[in-house]
Amino acid sequence: MLTVNDVVKKLGFEIKINGDLDKEVTGCYISDLLSDVMAKSKDGELWITLQTHPNIVAVAVVKGISAIIITNNRDPEPDTAKKAETEKITVLKTGHTTFETAGMIYTLLKSENLL
Amino acid sequence: MNVTDIIEGCYQLMEGDFTNAGVASSELKSILTKLGVPLDIVRRTAIAAFEAEMNVIIHGVAGTMHYAISETEVKITFTDMGPGIENIELAMKEGYSTAPDWVREMGWGAGMGLPNIKKNTDEMKIDSAVGEGTTLEITIKLRKDGPC
Amino acid sequence: MEISKIVELLNGQLVVHGSNKTVEIETVCSTDLMSDVLRFATKGTLLVTALNQAQVIRTAEIADIPAVIMVMGKAIEKELTELAEKKDITLISTNLPTFTTCGILYAEGLIGCLEGQ
Image (tube, rainbow over all chains, first blue to last red; front, side, top):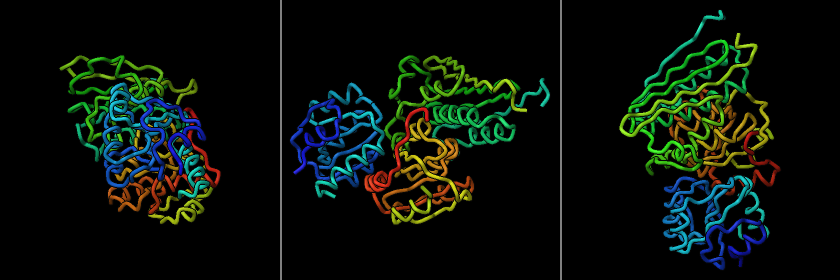
């Protein structure tokens, strides 16, 4: 089983908000369009996005996202961070681009037979 | 091109008109390319103009884009009748956005517009007041050898 | 990497074939936010997106992007296709989601865009 904590340790993402690092990671979804995430993402997936506004937390809660990964060195907005803390949603940050973050996670999930 | 020649043009911009968003910047890009302006300058100008166009279309109610190309620079002025910018310093911060959610679902409103404009221009002037609209003037210098 | 190889790797469909057949893709920009395309993408960049709007082509044109991949098997808006034809921008469709699309291209050695590139 792969957890959010495993992903953080292996890929070096920064933890901005610690929700539940023991949550199981089932896959990965990439989108900056909340409607797409609402329609297509699955429970337990990591969610890679450039969006930093508070609505991402609501979406993550509803869809059972294991962790939100914000790329390109962006920070969650203050309201986003507060909401994530309250809702216990893990928010991670990386200096890598969305494409590279996807590639790294793809490689990791493949090695864990999760693809 | 004569030293005294200035090429000018003007476009109307309407809030919510995503169908035509980018047409003005695209045409300006074509004009600059045809004039032989170096490609990196064309690119910077097009990016800045496009972002500014989108700002009017997202926030501005109605407005205009006016450009003037001289031998030494391109000056583009965006004027709108929108709500005005309450805090310009805040608006210049990457990620700060007042765009409504539906705009984010259209691929915009991430708060990168003004920072992108500043990054790609040589001069940027914003004149805005709440309730009175906004005027944005951007200048991109052309190379010493000019476009002609 | 040539566009034809990318289409093959992603089991994709060439919806609009731009006239620049020899363009080499060096970097990939994966985003649905157009301001970020303007910030990062350059001439040899492939745009991977799920934003099914003509805006994608307008942005690609402004940023000198030669090719766009629309993911998730989305039925591409007619306006988008027509604009891609008009602006001579290659448009590829794939049924794969963004994550798999990026993963495959990353495994083949393509890299992401860096600011100021």
